[in-house]
Length: 234
Image (cartoon, rainbow, N blue to C red; front, side):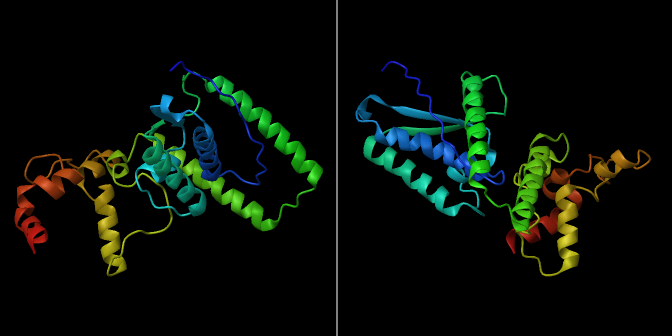
């Protein structure tokens, strides 16, 4: 089947930035695919997005904190297209402004739609409430926080297990003291290898002679083998 380029944009009035609009863009693509008459010619649809959160929700079963209705609609649409038409739906994450073919066209269309939406919003005299501003500020701060966390050079071990930033605790600890110990252990803050980065006078090595990292402390240090076995098998 020859490659086909389809350009379309939708005007969306919005009072704040949110992963919701990333999900809407993905749904527009899937809606278009579902309306194509001769679907037998299509074997695969690959969707590129710079939103790790959107892709995580749709492919990795990340917890849906907001936009549940839209997310579930997209997931149902993906299953329907794959089951009834045999079309593979694949997602690829690409960093924003990466050198990906078609990015310039997509960016131009997005700017045109945004300009048109702003004009409609002005003409409609849409009222922005105090709550709207607070919500927008919170979402924007979280978006910047997430961006910094995704691109930081530090905390990469912890990032492997907690890729989405949140002020809400997802763990149920018996008391505050236990929560503090586990939190510091996960980050490696109390371990010598981390402390050595703050104060070079501190020896970064464990008593056994190896670097005292989180991985070493939890999985390999012979000094804690008995405690490790107790935790694993009792």
